[in-house]
Image (cartoon, rainbow, N blue to C red):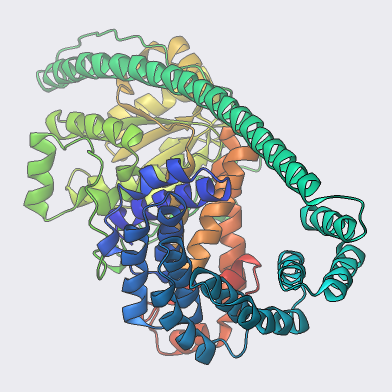
Length: 612
């Protein structure tokens, strides 16, 4: 699914939310920004048509509905077209759709409702309309049209039938607007009210209804204004915080680049030169992370995988790095071109620097395909572009990077993507990744693991837990063994800040970083779709709507730091259900050694626990 199609889906979900809340004007503003000619899904077109109809733009609504009608005539599109025609006061055209509706709907009672409404607009005699409502009552007894039937009896002077119909309505429904009207009509026939009394009562009820609607509208507008004010204040605060962080990061990056170049030149000349670059990171709540998902970029190695006899009893190993050849790596890009994508203008993303762009082009690589959803989250992309510009312009034997973020923010996944990118650019010799927690690293001697760690990317999780001795040993290992290709420290920003504040040498060496933010609903959807694609699944339009609804719910009820984990839990559960449902298909693909079949497996509403 392309990024343009993803943006259209997000906008459509915003429209659906606003429509459900009755805010059709706000929904229409978003609808105006969508290139409707590129939409294919009938449900999306029906949604837009309803919004335009509610806002009185009947010509636009009809144009959208006729696209669906020309593609396939269904009872749903006929109903919507009749609604628009009646709103246009065009009963003759509505009558032509009603004839088709009768053939397709199988005698659905709604056909009698449309027949009555069309007849009213065509000023058909009451005698002709009466049998329509009598048949409707026999098929489906509704409060509104029961009262319409009583009114017809009244207008035709059939008092007994009118009274009987009013009694039935009151008996069946008990209370409500139409029940109250039926009681007034009965009171008139009993002599308790005159015609003038009824008119006055009707006028009073109309005034009360208008006043009630006006109050409700004022309350709704006041509530929306307050919500907008709060949202704007929060947005401004977040933007200001982000701006300050980005300015600090940009300034420090320039300092770090100069320091790194100076250091490299000094090392080549055999000189010992000291440089100081102290930095306080953005403070965040301390948290540790388990990887949200594994990637194909390399085999992530858990500490428990190394044979126990290689270590003293009290130690635990980093883990053996897989010998799988890098040519076995297969990548399915989330953002591969799709057939008939929606062609809205994408929001501007930070462009790649000249040097980075040239290196990628030289290797025939695509930045977005290597960094997946992170490349489309502007707040992260901007930092990645800066980080990689330093990497490609400053020569280093071992690239020392930092990734900070809350628990379950995708730090390890981004680390593996970066390892793959550096390999593809020939800055390291292998895309293999080994990960270890700082607590385990405190207990082992890296010098004894040279063979296992040769040329790998070492990811240190919870890096703030490294002791002073461990940090010194890691730096010695980096400078004197030429074993590691890349070292990435991961933790929350506060823990990393404390580490670097206390370890000046670490602060000088690890001078290139990315901070992962707390994601919004659109960014969460990117992660969900990326994971679905990595599992060789597609997602149909109905399941997509359910997924976006679930993510919207998560953003409302979960704290920001827990949203990605909750989203991925939802997706993984749906994929498990889909695997169970598709077990036979999966076995057939496995037996044919074909896990990338042309017709991918598809997530449906059923997999999210919704039965249609």
